[in-house]
Amino acid sequence: MSQNSRPIRIGTRGSLLATTQAQGIADRLIAAGHPAELVIISTAGDTSTAPVAQIGVGVFTTAIRLALREDECDVAIHSYKDLPTAPEPDLAMAAVPERVDPRDALVSRGDLVLGQLPPGSTVGTSSPRRAAQLRALGLGLEIRPLRGNLDSRLGKVANGELDAVVVARAGLVRIGRTEAVTEALDPVVMLPAPAQGALAVECRADDAELVRILAELDDPSTRAAVDAERAVLAALEAGCTAPVGAIAEVVESIDEDGRIFAELSLRAAAAAEDGSEVIRASVVGPVDRAAELGKDLAAELLERGAAALVNPGS
Image (cartoon, rainbow, N blue to C red; front, side, top):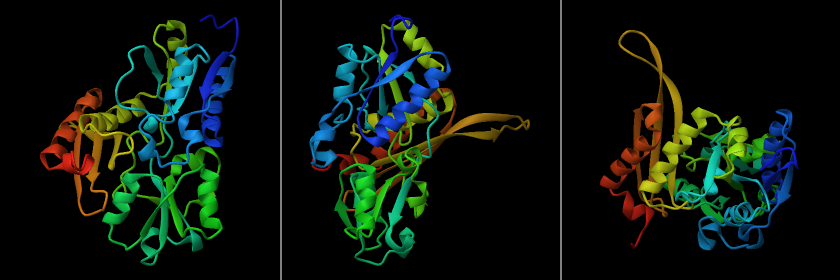
């Protein structure tokens, strides 16, 4: 595309969170001298009230990718964790910007942290992964299904419909609502979804000029972490709604000669939806082998019985 003819059209869902995320990308492009504007696209996930696990993987991303392919927009912005793991050869993952805090967050009535919630407390979540890990803690919580945008989820706590909700902290950061967080949940307690807090910036693979422009937004450490996390998910043959958590980060290590070098630390877990079992594993290795580390870790989880937890009944 010729960047001189018109602004870069950025396709996004219409929710406050999605448009805030997309506007952040637009602002960075504009600051770099590339005019940009948002194009709002309605997705099946926006029009259905059914649980995400029911309406399927890619529910928030398929329509945006279709708009990209049909030249209704030039760039697609996704919450990376919503994307199916299968590659799309005609689309380029042009940038993975620096991620926001990947942890899950508890928002509760009375500012109670997770360990203070009395047995029987109602906790809302849209995620089988969160529900499974919450049940595995053995706190006697009553897990309730939850849909709707972030404001409506927080509203269910404020109006007393629920005692607490668990949501992605990154979303609250992006819409300026971090004051609502009662507790940021340590990954030791609850492993986040693979790629949580990260954005995926896609464009058509044959648009070399735009691929080059968007590459300026890429954060290599975030991309490596997300590649490792999603490789776990792909190797487990699990969708983005499966009860699988993973988190990777680039860490500094010291070799025998006292030299500092970067490594990738990856942790992952698969949980039974009823919380009866959680299988955990971890690995540390070269940053440039991110995807291989994810596959290796998934193989370890599978050896220890993860398949039966990720795809029960299969």
